[in-house]
Length: 552
Image 1 (tube, rainbow, N blue to C red):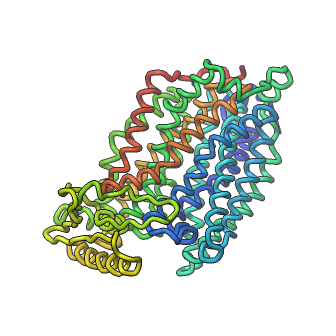
Image 2: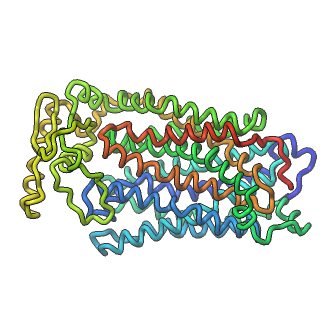
Image 3: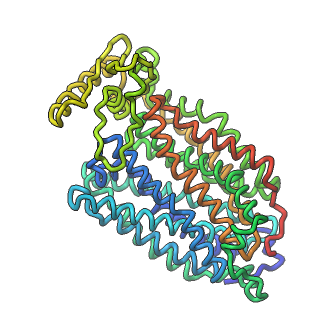
């Protein structure tokens, strides 16, 4: 494979460059497919591995297990980024794909909690951590490798093809899940969900074969031949202020906002449709897949545009648009996805009347606590039902109640009751409240006849176009901010803290905020605030890089 660039290469993609981009992008797509399977199947995984918890805590903990992989991504960036700057880009991201694919395949083999008890979630989380470490080293290697092969003036265009792979990975995972749902039918929730994880083994074989055909980056080879490589990339990257300052600005002024817009526009939208609006899973997956398919070309469009007008203005505009329009777009999703919720919340609003001192933040990661205060009992039922509500303060010591339109249902204090008595009374209360909600027009699930597919598809496509704006040019921007000798290490850490922590924890934090407040849109504040932070810091302090020489 050619590792040098002739004068003719400067005009566009050559055969050698196509092979380089394809090899890097396909491998990365398969890795993201592996990673997204867990996110797409979070509700089923909660039942399989966290069945000892109550439904609300089980779902939140399942999201936390998903987020655990994101938590360790920066550590993977440090480990594999250092290796990439010391031994080369090619061999490092060959290692990452083997770890990633193997871990994902093994998830499909873990027995459920009902079979092996607490060992099941422990093994699951351990494999999630391995996946996160591997992904922490993957992206920086692929982005650096492609950018270092790209001709001047084409880096945004070339690296934008890598940006497509994350969305294609989600798209592929959704398609495989849909096929498996159709194939296994009612058995999907019991064993059919494992098939997509098994499929990753064959994707792993293909990816490893493709990666083995690659040559090392020409800029890395040149740097090593001239003796300009770094012997301590971690020290140079993070213990020297001139570089650390750029790392911090890249994190807060670029990748944090990019991450929340990325995860908000794809993953949180997926969770919102399925968990909050109760749209059936097949419809939800088809809508997200359709939006991804329509919007994906914009990754390349905005990547190429960033070669002309710059990376910074496009990414900042994406953050601005998301901050300004997320609330109206998600409210429109409710209007067109499950209008009965919207109508019922207006005609028969739900109000929880309780002493605030008796209302807990209902998160129990080990499943040992039973929430028996009257306020918690009410909110548990409402959150599980996906019903929006508002809070009204009551006098200290008041037993909580819930107003559903004109009806008032009193809760009960369960602290003095034994286990069986509490379960009996809680079940009776849930039935009574459920009947009241049904009478008030709150649906148990979205009515397919009322789901407006075309409008939902338009709204979801807009969200994904925002994703393409912030994500399409980001790889080129990060690569261009740092010198060759420490590029892999320096760019990987802010990218994976931004995407791993700010982005990866978005579903968990947003879901918990909604459960606490009762407002189904309250979780959007997480995205909006961080997007505005990035807009301000990036606009004021981060430089444009489209014309820099990255061979230094």
